[in-house]
Length: 161
Image 1 (spheres, rainbow, N blue to C red):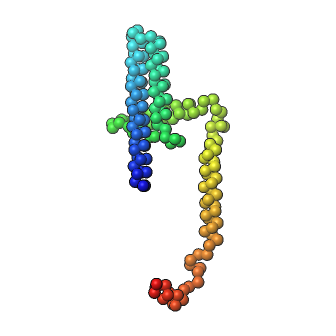
Image 2 (tube, helix red, strand yellow):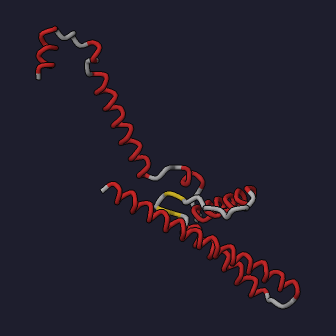
């Protein structure tokens, strides 16, 4: 049963990562088209509307990538193509972090974003309560080292069983 659960979780996460990689490739293609449109606009063969459409496509692709990178409250760390310099990987992660922070704010004030969600506070309180209960229970039990020594007859009786 555990093997099926682990295999199912692996399959689910693997599919989500593959979807995130497809979304990243789509975003990179949209960015390439936007750069091409900017170049065509400089040469006079594209209009402002074409440029706006390309930028809107990049924004939509970035939002789709952000959504594809989420599994519940967790965020997928993107697998990067071989040979990509680390500074580019860091720059892309920083860009994603800025986008995620900007999209998650949606007009919320700074103080509201700093407070943890209710479920996190509740879970932390329950875990803390269980740890305190466990510590009190462990400290109220006599230690084995303080237990009275067994007599030779008791040891012989246990061995005979």
